[in-house]
Length: 308
Ligand code: NAP
Image 1 (cartoon, rainbow, N blue to C red):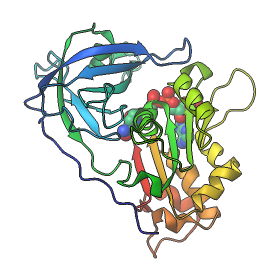
Image 2 (image 1 turned 180 degrees about the vertical axis):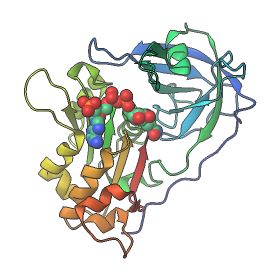
Image 3 (image 1 turned 135 degrees about the horizontal axis):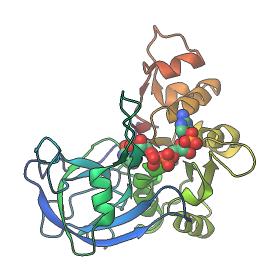
Image 4 (image 1 turned 30 degrees about the vertical axis):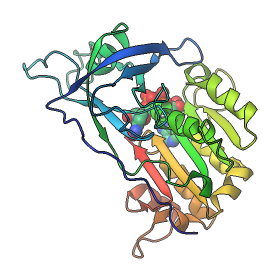
């Protein structure tokens, strides 16, 4: 089985210094319930801009929030994962979407007396604005975290933590709601979040799993009210079906979310004797589980990783 062929994609059609204007056409919570976090699914109309029809699921676009920093400089661009299939929310590539979590935290400083509330500038602005508001946008960017050109040639294991689910919403919709008919390959999606109420797009994935025998939706809750904490890599380790699928040479592995989430998955690949199918492991690094966290092993052609 040859390595997947990725499509050619448009890159940086709109530069950060000269954003174009999109318009907010949708904004709704995409969480399962009330939580300490706030995540919104946001739709932006980019028709008439160079982004129209020129983005793919898995790519990112930029948002430049209005206003200036405390130093008086214009705010810089922030990148958001596209959560739409490549044909957009409207089927014509005019409306793209993303998954925005409000950044809300106590300020972390060296001075223990300074611990005031910090509100992320762009995420809160994007979540605050009303329909029809202007949104300065840039991009698209990213040429590797993509679905392959021939989707039916491959199986898929998608693993997300938190808002790392964004690109997988677009990819799963693209695979299962394709105008030419749904992809018939095996597709597993695993999402890890702190609380059950934090699950994003849960209705969508549950409904798709009910209507497509080849789509399997798994969740891991790290701070359950009762029972054991579970990280999403345990879903992969404990599932015989996913482990068997990973051993299949047609399978592609996609990982998106928090840095470090890949370690447990890589260790599992090593233990299963299939690590070389997904990672480029240099000869001079001993093949031991402790070395996956040294960041010396690199994702290979069948492994797409976006972690921050
Ligand atoms: P979140 O709601 O805090 O959820 C993250 C979940 O992962 C929590 O349940 C957390 O558990 C768990 N976790 C922590 N360490 C882990 C590990 N080593 N292995 C497995 N699970 C682990 O997430 P968030 O605030 O949305 O953050 C998501 C991250 O994804 C951000 O860093 C964001 O930048 C990134 N992201 C990347 C892209 C992209 O690259 N395209 C797109 C969207 C988001 P506990 O907190 O209970 O320990």
